[in-house]
Length: 191
Ligand code: IMP
Figure 1 (cartoon, rainbow, N blue to C red):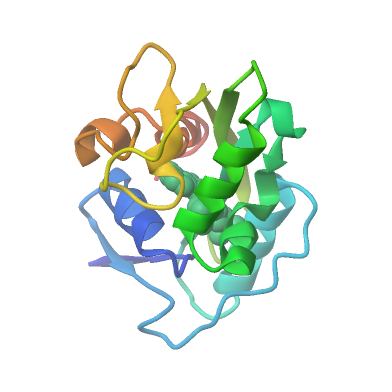
Figure 2 (tube, rainbow, N blue to C red):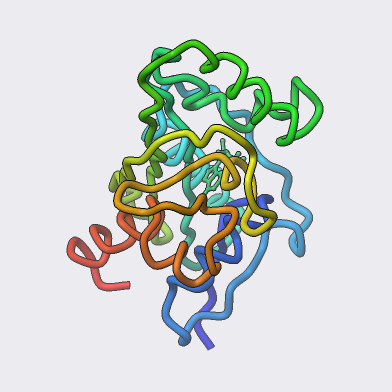
């Protein structure tokens, strides 16, 4: 069976990317290979997903897929953005990071936001192929739902009423920023 390394330590992302990939691949996690994550020194999502793909690829002789993603809130100058994971780490949890965002938005009219995913696919010895997926929506008034991961309980995608935290996981996986990026990737290369 062909192997692919899904370059992430985030269980939520691993599940979603696994679901998107064809069945022919045996999906490998860096945890099983005892590979730690690289430092995300890039200033953009694209720089970081490329950096991760190159880093993880140096350990294996089969393809690697990795992403860098985050939540951008318009009224907060598109923050937390590339710092989405770090904000939760600094504040102690995603619950605290979500509360922090809700508090920052308390007196703001514009609650629009988007999730973005830069997805990089790299074959051994080749440069990564990178695409960007964006999903627009808004920040809810409260934390709602226990499904999903990360900021899912405060994000309502456009033309929907429920947060990702309330949505059936397959419904979310088939519409989110990672899915949109994956669709673009499949148009560019054969996976
Ligand atoms: P990074 O790409 O490892 O820097 O982490 C991105 C962070 O963005 C994750 O830890 C989540 O907090 C957040 N994030 C990315 N995609 C999603 C999603 O689909 N739902 C909820 N949060 C997400």
